[in-house]
Amino acid sequence: MKSVPKSWALTVVFLFVVGCGGGGQETSEQQSFIGTISEVNAGERTISVTIPDTAETMEAGTVSLAFTDSTEILKNFMAMPVDSLQVDQDVRVDAVRDGEQHVPSRVVVLTN
Image (cartoon, rainbow, N blue to C red):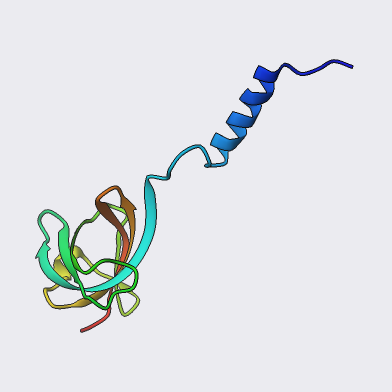
């Protein structure tokens, strides 16, 4: 019976671990949080959201969000443009955290 070289076996194990995502830390993390819009810049397609002290999934403070072409903005289940967002509206944000940046995939307006 032939034996498998140790270097080949280690290579296979390494590729399996890396391929399954266990080879390093992930760079992005999905997060959802509720806050109040404190700033809107429709021209640059950005908003700032203030997170309250009572938030469970995020630290309190202000988060800046830059919208992408795939970011959904919804109010009463209807799509709406960035320029319809207003300061003091409560929103739920679904975003991917990539390092220090938050990239929103969906922003849902909770108040009128």
